[in-house]
Length: 115
Image 1: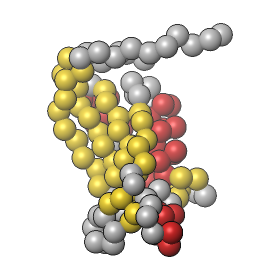
Image 2 (image 1 turned 120 degrees about the horizontal axis):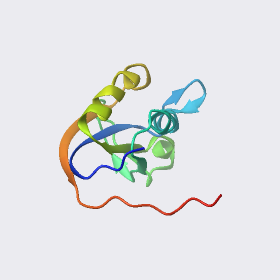
Image 3 (image 1 turned 90 degrees about the vertical axis):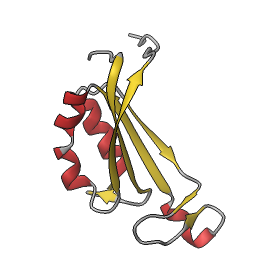
Image 4 (image 1 turned 45 degrees about the vertical axis):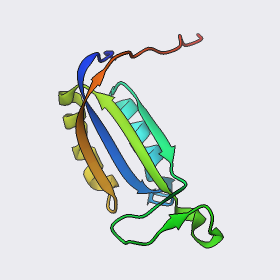
């Protein structure tokens, strides 16, 4: 796996927490596929409130709607690697928003893995 520095592309995917792919959360499937594709990293962020194309507000304050909070998956890597990954999202993201934007990686470091 390469460690990106300088110009990069950020992929952000907004979906619902309850979105499933073969009985598994879509966000987890995206992270596992990004890892298998050798991308530099992926993170999942759970929102506390939001709305999307349906205009239905989902919030943790209302128990009846708290099961489908917004989730954002963020992936950053060089442009080619991110664009090569995009076709995998076609089958996974039926409802949601997929965005790309340019960014600059200032520092990318991680902990050493224990063997």
